[in-house]
Image (cartoon, rainbow, N blue to C red; front, side, top):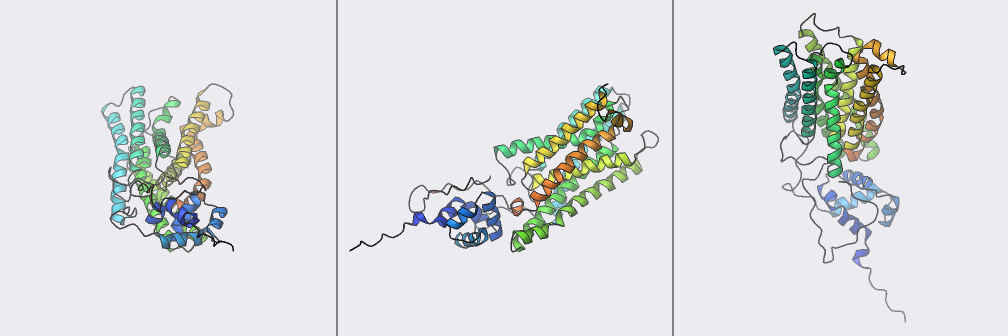
Length: 390
């Protein structure tokens, strides 16, 4: 007679193995859709879902959400979407920090109006370093709580930290462009009035980015699936970008209305276009940084800085290069418009595709996940569908 078949070991349960591997994600999730987005980002494909005996990743996420208990309120990460006044307070502080270099630059010009161009260029370089440091610091602020105790945003880790530094350096280069570009053609030093409007507008960019992530997390909890979530987010991204552009336009109009007359060239359509292109690029970079996409943010900011530098070299070199006459005929604003506009146009489709995905709005864990036990029945060999993103 055939011996009875031994019972199936618990270690062969693929759902339990997946649950152990992604326990931190399941414990911090506020909705099954958030687990589905995390599994999708981790590379859990149809084969792994089929091994878990589910039809799709959403059904698998619902089972994981039901089987894993939620993290308690004490250990959960604080909500990144605070009240409006908290977001406004952090954004106002960011605007003040970004405005300080332009104030110092204006003070130098007021005290020493005949300063050497090299001295003004050195001051602009210091301003760019300050902008980069401010961008790197404000990227760590979460939920309107600036300070070292704030939890790390999504996309952290050694690689993410390096990419954030590159993106911050690119932000500093874009903000300092209006101050240094007039030196290329031997013209008069630039006034810090309109660059100040672009810098102070970074506070509005921070507010819009926080509001965008707040809307994303709200829709993440309310949507029934990824398709519905994307439909809900379609009008949110243009609204956030347009709010920042309107804020920069109002600030620019305000500084143009109070600037001293007769000392600067007219601020025409070309200058407005350059200001708008830089504002659009900065808005996308801040949104990508806030939503844990530092790679795209670094690529866009670096492309703007590198492209503008290349166009500046084409304009300055006495060579018959393509487009040199066009750039030389329209002044330094044309260089900024072309460099920032091209980078923003290339970054916009990628940002649109990335920022309407649920994974861009998943809350970051409050700290490193606890080390799993190495003995006992709960120790499992993980599945091999891919590494869990940090």
